[in-house]
Image (cartoon, rainbow, N blue to C red; front, top):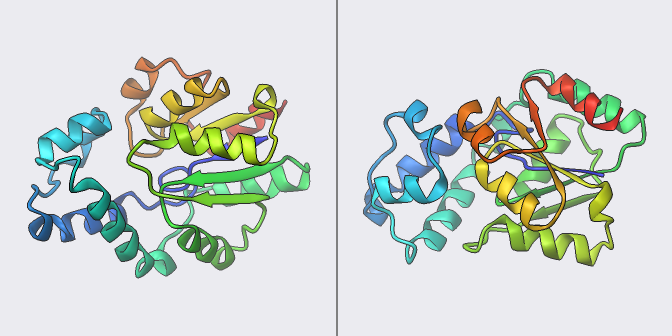
Length: 202
């Protein structure tokens, strides 16, 4: 099975997401993001420190950003060529699911808009404890064989969560974190183009 992250991996949502984060900066008292490329070489904890965003406020900011993203979801487009690749994977009867910190409703709207309803499970939940617990619960609740599962994501925390759950990780370089930063976490696979997803099932 292939388990996908959503934002930055399937949806080309980075700039919309950053806009939502900046829109809430004044209300929650943290700095706006003005240098996206610099942030691509940093991990989540480093970004929070640079923005001056405390862990105490983080759950409220995450919820506010999720709500704001709902108003932008209809304008989002898939990552270039990912739609064609997902369609082919579906035709090959490859099991696919999504685990994301975005809202399930947002993901479902996006998939309907782009005729990408190929995913067996969609699990959207914000968690201050990170994706590791989300993946753990997902694998257990659906009785998924970890040895035959690959998590596909665009952030260092995706790689770490996969390793923690003893599943393979595929890091995509077209999303948030840079290739250099992703490589530092030693993912099982590095993907530079959506078509390289076919290599995972070869």
